Image (tube, rainbow, N blue to C red):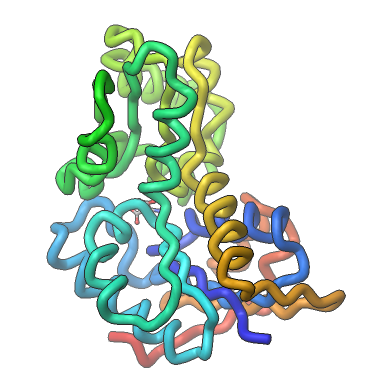
Amino acid sequence: MRPIGVFDSGFGGLTVARAIMDQLPGEDMVYLGDTARAPYGTKSLPEVREYALECLDYLANQDVKALVIACNSASSAVLRDARERYDLPIIDVILPSARRAVKLSKSGRIGVVCTQATANSLSYDDAVAAVPDVELVTQPCPRFVEFVEAGVTSGAELLQTAQEYLLPLRAAAIDTLILGCTHYPLLSGVISYVMEDATLVSSAEECAKETYATLTDLALLNPSPDPTRRFLTTGAPALFETLGKRLLGGFVSQVEQVYTIS
Ligand code: DGL
């Protein structure tokens, strides 16, 4: 009867929450966005680690049955620690996406777009290191998070930014592109437009599939006809609700503020 705990630095993890709701519509969920301290992607890995563990501790105390780290930057910084720290299944965004990209790629040339923190961690490089004949090209796209947080998912400025960021990936002739930040599925329109020959892999979608598989394997699924979903933020609840609704629709409501984290 326990909820799934989903954590992100802010709004991006809502793309994971939505994918989990699509695949597991009857499950209870509690979502925590650390919007007061977002973005994580511009911070150092030790700082991201500290914040992420505080948030995961908080969620683990909400009697959740699994923890989903719905943020690539946080997954990069704390995945190993989290697996040791909690006696709960831990689902991340990086390993499922890397696995899917390796399966999909025909040429072995795979791109990943992500935050600077994720790029610095080399977590995607580590994830594919053991796979022969795979070449990974990593491109940090820090301004993409700014566009999403401002509610901008189209327009001339975004298109020009995308063309500049994605030029090295086009030049590298990648055939598969991992959206290695949970904000980026909201920009998949512009990214597909610029990267028309590449197959996109959404870390949100792959993380939701991994959540489904993990809970199925551990016999932890418990669908109900009237699931409860709570949305918690360390920042302003009204802003979270407005932007959440604008980007992802009406399921983001009655957002609660949590004060006890930092
Ligand atoms: N959602 C985060 C990720 O997947 C990025 C947002 C941030 O920088 O906080 O990396």
